[in-house]
Length: 167
Image (tube, rainbow, N blue to C red; front, side, top):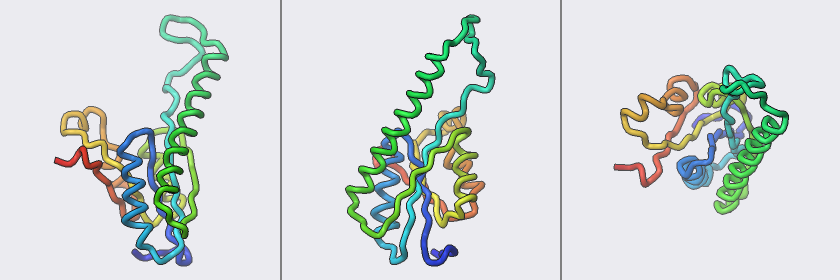
């Protein structure tokens, strides 16, 4: 892999609350970073879902959301981010790789846009993502963030399948 930023590799790993993303992180640590002779920055990227497009202070029934509901929602996302990043940090510590710098980034919005934008902004050398292993129908309905990112990013990208999804 050719490295443009002064010998240091920058690898972005998209993480979320799924087993698949933690498996992809572990795979990256064991198969990419452990064999690297360069210093490496591992960027753990979590993307919070965007707020609903028509979010207002009123819900469907016309009741006013109190500030406590909005605060509870923000608190929920903060705790979710903390939990995911904590799990990811534990995966990194288990690898016992010493020549690695870990950065944590949190974005908000459409996952594919945030991931691709972050990869471009950072000038990443590689993007690593997990695969949920959806079949054709589910992927057609829900979409595939990894597929969309593969079409957009300029750097090499690895989509790691979780062993339970390999058939």
